[in-house]
Image 1 (cartoon, helix red, strand yellow):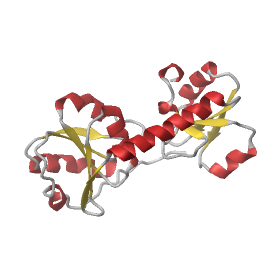
Image 2: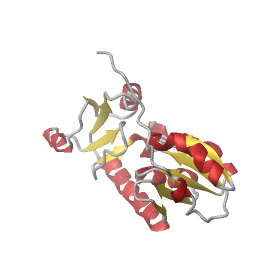
Image 3: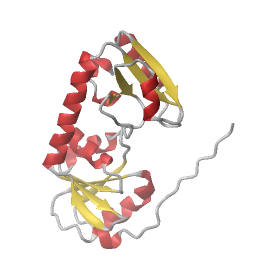
Length: 203
């Protein structure tokens, strides 16, 4: 079946929102795809900034590329798991400009520490599990079967589960101790860990 992908960019005027930012730090500008075209406008309005580009919840490489060139980051978007991931991977302050609420906020230390504690708890359950289910999505941009196969070779007693639409309740139908998610990081549960959160030897 042929598919046609049409980008859906936001037309919200971000100028009043960007003008609320008063920091003198050099900012790295990042956004979700909806606001990608507005990064140039934000860059023109701010006195000291550079454009990093688009990020995904599971891919913040554009932030990592410029982390040594900036003091902190400004994320333009409404999703919250993106800026937390930026903060975790760069160890820098992340401001959030939400065009939907027209508010400026920032990721705080408590939220980062809570996330780290959650990840540590999941790693403990991961190491104590006797068998594993590896989740693979068929959706475009999330399909990572090769990574799943590579992980299966490194992880004894592991099985690959391929899905299109995810339903956490269906996981109860399988005798699996712990799950590894290779798809969107928003798939979350106390018994599911993202592949990116595993030690490097498993990636």
